[in-house]
Structures are given as structure tokens and as C-alpha cells.
Image (cartoon, rainbow, N blue to C red; front, side, top):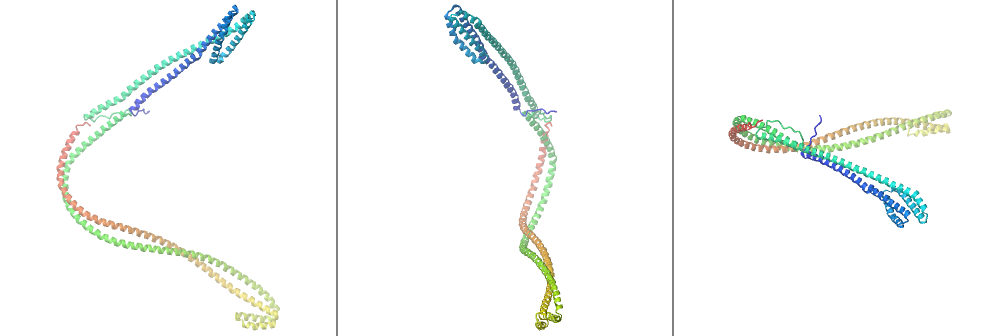
Length: 563
């Protein structure tokens, strides 16, 4: 179902109606304007163009006929006056021809050219006649001038007839346009009248009908009748808003009176209960007065206890503040330990790198000593070859080598043996002995160095492992110290919060003490007020009786309305 269009206010409705009427009037005015403009243009074309051309055609034709008559009279009678009149009319002819060319040059040019040729032929007639050749003049007149004259005048006559037809056609168009404008004007005026009357009737009806309904409803409301159905709303204008407000007023009054009736019945029924309750409240007030005295005593005791608790909380706050200061001191020392642990960790990392370098150097030295031992063995082989050559001196060289090995640094006997060897082995024995001693010493020292380096390498490896273990331990210590610092920081923060909370508790306890004192005073005042309440309840009981009577009267008034 299509939603019906509703105008939201009366002003819009009336404006809409008048706007349609004004719109029709404007359209009608525009149509009349263009119709009149078109008629004026047609009349202007007739007056300024067609009619003037018609008049000029007639005047030129008349002028040409007169001049032709002057020419014939001159040829017949030889009257120079006719020639003079012919010549004098030339200026009028030229003026008419120029005017015709100005108005209608395209159509008039050809006929004007013929007329100029006709004028040239007339000049030839005059020349032939004046020279005594009358026969030639008559011949030119009859064979050339008169046929051309008839042709020109026929063309002018045709143009005149054409102008008359055009004028008649334009006139008929103007008459038809006027008739059309007349009938359209009648139709538009009729539509404007019909729409205006219909708009006025509908608008007045849409306003008066709901207003009459409102008047009837308000008369019923004035008489106390609120039982009717709500008014229907069929528009969205100010009358509809007034109808909506009236419906809301009726509903609100109906609900209000219903509530008043219910309340009056409730007040009437509960008046007696209020009277009995007042007596019970009076008895309770007496009991409350006794209880308030006991509460006052308890409030004083509570105030004293709160004062003692405040003193205890002050001491507790001081202890917590002292613990907080100790915690901050521990936190500072823990931070220092953490810094030293980090420094030790860095040093251990440097030691690990240094031990790695030492391990590499010792391993390289062991390899070099092993190479030296191998070279000394090769030398020993060469010495054995030399010993085979010096068989006789081998024993002495061996004894010298043994003595030298036993003596070590104290090689005193080596010199005695060496002397004997020199004597027995000469230069070869000396060389063999020296080489053997040197090789043996090198081998011994190389073995010692190799063993020492191997032991040092093992010690380096063990030291490296210990340093790594120490580094791991320092890392674990650093982590533990870091966690300990975090825990100490949290504990310090908690102690700070405890200090703040204890200060707030101390303030709260002081407030409790003061409030307890005030409560004790307030309880005493309540006890006094309770006694006054007890006396006031007697007045409430008497007033409740009067309230019940008033409720009965109110219920009687409400029943006068028809709901």
C-alpha cells in the first residue's frame, strides 16, 4: 500500500495551492507574451517589409505607366512639355528604385536592371525622334520599349499580387493565433478558477473539520467526560499537532485521575494503618532512646581505643620506615656487588682469551721441540758413523761424554778426560767427542723441555677449564645478584607502599577517633531527637485520621469524572 502524502503544516498547504495558481498564471503570461510577440513580429514584417514593397511596386508601376504615356504623347504630338515631364519624373523613378533595392535587393535587382535597360531604350527613342527619324523611333518604341514595358509592369504586378497573398496569409495567421490565444486564455482562466476554488474549499475543509472535532472533544472534557476514543489524525499540519496534543492531554488526565482514584483509595485504606504504626513508632522511639544511651557509651570507648591504636600505628610506621631505609641501603650494596660481578665476568672472559693464546703457543713449542729431537737423532746417526772411524778413541770419548753428563754444570773432570781424548784421538776424536756431547746435551735438554712443555700444556688446559668453570660460576652469580637486586627493589617498593599505607591508616585511625567522639555526641543528640519523635508521633496519629477523611472526599470528586 502506497504511503499517502501529507503536508506538514497549513502554511505549506496554502503556499502550495497559491503556488500552483501563480504557476499557472505565470505560464499563461509567458504564453501570452510569446503569442503577442509573435503577432507583433508578423505585423512588423507586414508593415515594415511586405506592405512597403507592395506600395513601392504599385508606385513604380504607376510611375512607369506615366512615363510611358509621356513618351507616347511626345511621339504622337512632338510636345516638348511631355519630354520635360518624362525627364522630370526620372528623379522620382530613381528614388523609388533605390528604396526598393534597400528593402528587397535580391528580388528587385533583376527587375531594376530590366527597368534600367528600358530607360536606355527610351533614350534611344528620344535620340531617334529628335534627329528626325520618327519611323525608327516608332519602331524602337513598338518593338522594344513597349514589350519590355509590359514585361516589367507584369513582373511588378506579379510581385504586388504575391505581396498581397503574403499579407493575407500573415493576417490569417495573426487571426488564428489570436483565436488560439483567446481559447487558451479561457481554458487557463477556467483552470485557475477551478483549482483556486477547489484549493480554497479543500483547505478550509481540512482546517474546519478537525477543529470542529476538537471543539466537541474539549466540550466533553469540560463536562468531565474522558471516556471517548482518541481523535483520528489524518494530516501532519498544525491542526494535527493540536489534535495530538489534545489526545495526549486526555490520556494524561485520564491516567492522572485513575492514579488519583487509586491513591485516594490507598490513602484511605492505609490511614488506619498509619495511625496504628504511629503508636508502634512511639513505643519504638522510647526503646531507641535507651539504645542510643548505650551506643553513646560504646562510642566513647571506641574513641579511646582508636587513640591507643593511633599511637601503636605511629610506632609501626617508624619501624617500617627504618626497614625501608635498610632495604634501600642493601639495594645500593647489591648494585655494587652486581657491578663488581660484571667486572669479574669481563676479566674472566679476557683470561679465557689469554689462556687460549698461551695454549696455542705451548702447543707450537712442543711441536718445535719434537722437531729438534728428531734433528738431534739424525746428528747422532752421523756421530755413530764417525765413531766407527775412531774405534780406538770411542771408549775415551764415551767416558768423557759419561763424565760430562754426570758432571752437568760441574764438568771439572771433563777437561782431564778431554785432554786424554785429544791425545789419543787427535783432531777426529775431539770433533766426535764435542759433537757427541752437544747432541746428547741437546737431546737431554729437548726431552726435558718437551716433558716440561707437555706438563705446562696440561696445566694450561686444566687452567683453561678452571677459568671457564669460574666464568660460568661468575655468570650464575651475576644472574643471582641481578635477581636479588630485583627482589630487593620490589621489597623496597613494597616497604615504601607500606609506609604510605601506614601513614594513611594512621590518618584514618585519627579520623575514626574523631568520628567516634562526634558519633558519641551525635548519638546523644539522636536520643534527644527520639524523645521529640515520640511526642511528634501523637500528632501524626491525629493527622492520619484527617488524611483518611480527605482521601474519601478526593475519591468522591474523582468519581464525578467519566473514565
